[in-house]
Length: 255
Image 1 (cartoon, rainbow, N blue to C red):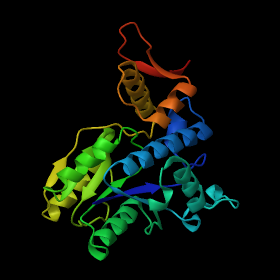
Image 2 (cartoon, rainbow, N blue to C red):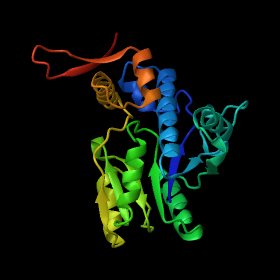
Image 3 (cartoon, helix red, strand yellow):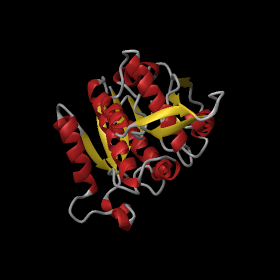
C-alpha cells in the first residue's frame, strides 16, 4: 500500500497561498478559503484511493508567529477539516513535520517511512492540485511497482505528486524547477523515473485562471470536478474572459 503524505499548513489568511492573493482578484481570506477547499478535495481523494493517508503538518512552533492561533493549534485546525470531510477520520494519521525547508520536511518523512517503517511506497503531495483524483493516486501507485521514482509534472516546472519506493538525496530536491531537480536527484541515486500526466497546481493568479477554465469546461462537459474547489469557483463568481479582440489574452475576472 502506498502512504500518501499530504504536507499541509492550516489554511489561514496570509499563510495559505500568499502569492495568489497578490496576483489574482482574491483577497488573503479568499485565498485561504480556496486552499481549504483544495485540501478537502485532496483528503477525500486519498481516502477513496487505495492509499493510506498521512497528514504531515508544521506545528505551531514552526509557524510564523503572526499565523499562530492561540485558540486553535495547527493540528486541531487540520484535524477539524479532516473530521468534516473524511468518511473515517480515525483512519488518517497526523504527524508533525521535521525540517526547515519543504525539501527537508518531505525528505525526512519519506525516508522515515521507507527505511524505518518499511512501507512499500510513499507519495508526497501539497494539497494544491485539486485534480489529484482517486484514479490519479491509484495510477501513481501502479507506476511505483515498476519505477523507484514517479513524478506528476505540473505548470512552471512544478510537480503535483512525487512518489518513491527508495530514498534519494532530498537536500534541495524540491528546489525550482522541481521536476528537473527531482529527476537530477533520482539520477544521482540511480533510480528509475516514471511520469504521470500533467495536472495544474494553484499558487498564483495565472494558475488560478487555468483552474477556473478547467473546472468550468469539465463541468459543462459533464465530467468529474473536484467538488469543494468547484463550489468555491462558482460561489466566488470566478470566470475567464478574453480581454482583446483576438482572444489571445484570457483574463481572470469575477462575475
